[in-house]
Length: 299
Image (tube, rainbow, N blue to C red; front, side, top):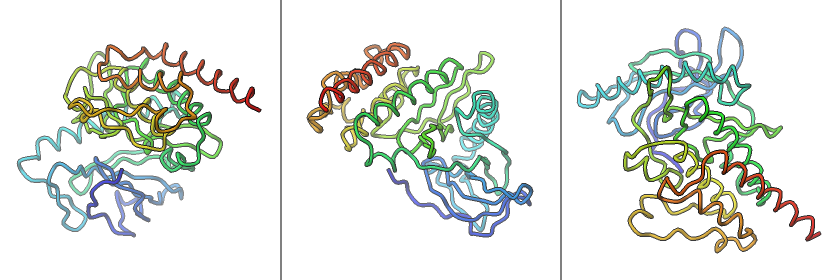
């Protein structure tokens, strides 16, 4: 799940006469994330620099140089992400940290910067090797409930995967990386060029089909597949071309059949064959209860 390295801002670079770059936290398909010091508050923050891979962008000093043939698309992407950042900040403040809190947005160096709270904890990708089936199911149940709340607010995340799910030491789940999301706001769909995460994205995202709650559900189930098998699932693109998805139970015989079937149901290539949010959460809750019961009987 690594991304192509791009030239980064140097340690000590100052942005907006306020934020001092301390180090690089990571790179993704849409940009680079830095740890920085907010000199006004004295607090450490995370700053995402918009620097998408597919736009042939180069860096000269601190400034990004965007080729003329991708400039219009880049400006459209920048505008869309800036608007989504403002809307998502409203949602995060009113929903107790359901999504990461956005503190500031500004343009500099011919690109967009998004300043976010610096979360304490680890990503689900980091935690995955340490999780047993019960813990994986419990985390995914909590995640499903949060995603269902976003759906009710008209938000599709569209990039759910283990490294976009942050877990605090207390177990609180926070969703990050909303640049790929689609937001319904006052009857208008606010979206941007969609990224595709090969192992976790639904086929309709890749083939530019109709998107819906079921698109996020595919990614949730792909994530659960990864958590309980410790293996990446076959991508939906390859599956669409005939490659077989190995059932989770064949990779980990300790997975109960009911959980195996639930994961496969959520990973159906046809969106119409995936369950609704409410049904899926009910199935997840029942699965967790059945798994807990099995564990008690086995003691």
